[in-house]
Amino acid sequence: MTVYLGSPNSQVQAHAANGMPVLLSYFILHTRNWWKQYVPSFKQILIDCGAYSAYTSGKEIDPIAYKDWAARYPWADACAGVDDIAGDFRKSLRNYEVFGFPTMHDSDPIELLSDLIPIARERGDWLGIGLVPPREGKENFVRYVCDNVPEDIHIHGWALRQYLHIPRIDSADSTAWFRNALSLKSHFLTAHLTYAECVDIMVKKFQRAERIRNYEEQQLDLF
Image (cartoon, rainbow, N blue to C red; front, side):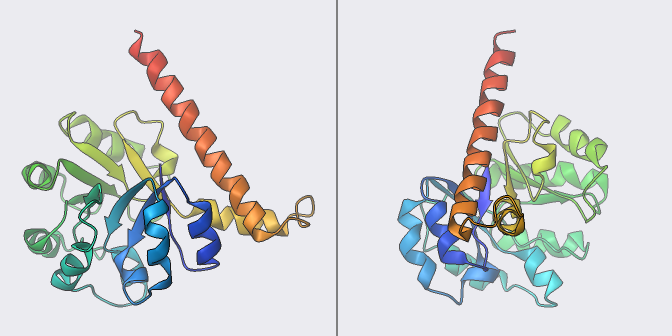
């Protein structure tokens, strides 16, 4: 599981993510400094350009500036390339030449996958799967990608926690943990809790889900 360090109540979230795998978004974080003190407490780090956030804000990301920023964290597990959310896969390919592992989108021509696999090999054996919202009902595409990517390549699903039941997805990021904490805070049964306490509850929920998934995978290994 990868959790997402977002902007609302960010310091509370950063504290709650102690010992957890965390996604650092260049688009959200590169102009801020407060969060750097928390980085040593994170279990693992995935560097993301924040292409979706940039797209919804009507802005573009400079791949070179992003590469320079990511270079500050050489211990990161992986760094994603700047993918074009608008659907221009040729632009994505040009950006991957600069830096980062590639992502296969459901808006891309399906034959592009064979071109992305060699790039993934060059970038630490990581490849992403991205779905144009709405993300529901697209399991056939996700399974196709998973079935056609070599088993030793790590597959990350961008905002695809709902597809973690597919064994080949090795990790996925999510904003649900802190968004659901806000919903929990407004529920009449838990309105007496602080936001920090609600975030702790959601982190525990994600940790439990990860333990269950690991246990189920171990059981499958027995067969």
